[in-house]
Image (cartoon, rainbow, N blue to C red; front, side, top):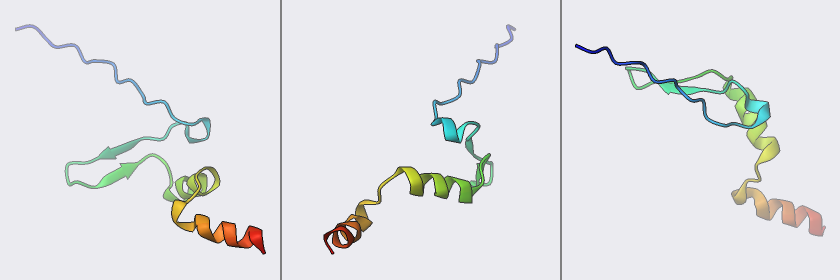
Length: 63
């Protein structure tokens, strides 16, 4: 029997601030991340505009 070679796992491209970010689901269905959730939330708050809160920003700028 021929042995199968393990394929090299290619890491996904991520933003430079999230280098090393990895998400996996274990055998129990639990999400495991290599990044602290608070760091991830801070990154998202800084880089992504929340569409649901956009109207609040518009009201503040018109005052």
